[in-house]
Amino acid sequence: MIPFFRKIRKKLAGENQFPTYSNYVIRERVLPVAGILKTQSVLWLLAILIGCTSSDKQPLIQDLDTMHPPDSNQIWLSHEHILVDFIGADSIQPDTWNHDSIIKEVLPSLDDLKEFGVDYFVDATPNYLGRDVVLLEKISHKTGLRILTNTGLYGARNNKFIPSFAHQMTAEDLAQIWIDEFENGIDHTAIKPGFIKIGIDTNDPLHPMHQKLVKAAALTHMKTGLTIASHTGEAAGLWPQLAILKEMGVSPQAFIWVHAQTEEDNERYLEAAEMGCWISLDGLGWDIEKHLAKILFAKRNGILDRILISHDSGWFDPQKEKQTIKPYTAIFKTLYEELKMQGFTDEEFNLLVSVNPVKAYSIKIKNHSE
Image 1 (tube, rainbow, N blue to C red):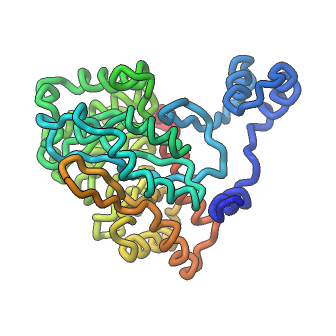
Image 2 (cartoon, helix red, strand yellow):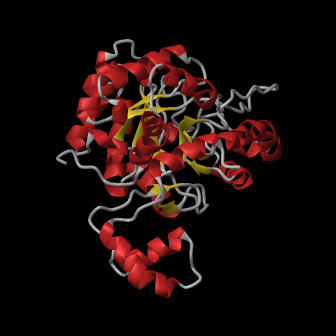
């Protein structure tokens, strides 16, 4: 049986559509050649090789395994965590983690997502805070989830998770490390990041280290097209980051304002949306009512097309003996029904869990002049 939420995606989006010209060439020139090679990725590769794609390019997403065009009926969780280790950059020891034990703890919560047809799971844990791409790969293969991991560094909490060597590096030096992960793989694997994750403390002006992180993220974006997701919180920390991006030539459309739900003045969302950045209301694992009010505000003010929602849930903590994995299902079990009672349509819900995440995480260099 197709899960209920997958039925919604099929009803709303229908079958995938290539651009019109690509449709013709794929049908007339690619399919006869493809023969038994019928996977979507092969067909797209052949289409690209013969130069048949139009200027209206399909979005490309980088998960742990491949860079590929997503189809239009896929459900996303756009900000979650599987493992987080808060011990600090100078003390963290990933080699001591037992993958089998971790998987045993987190797998039931991830398997719960099958009921709701979740396809994409964005793991927002940065390097030196618990990023473990081999663990994520094992989990992806067990669950069938397409998982996105990240490159970058996390400066929030007074730089506790910044390794000592990074303080001596320039923004250009950091960017080169992050670009190398995208081009060649993370930690001697073939796994590549699907976005850039940074974090700042809410100050204006930003801490010098945090200014450097934003500049490095901008340089990395301009080389790779990866979206920048920044742990930010209140809007006071948003504006100086956007100012740096503007100086570096990066559009706000390449930026996700992470933990935007902590901003109490909803009018700031209107300003951010007008500038073009993504507004991530990602604490739904912890608070439904506050998020509900903010989502309804976004609908009333016509900015639903800039909103992302997720739980910020999980996660396995290596520093704890007893684990409590916060569920990843409140959006589907609770928020969906609450929104429907407030007059939300399936099309509007689809924006939040499918259309917007694909646009936000699509790999494309976004210049500030565009």
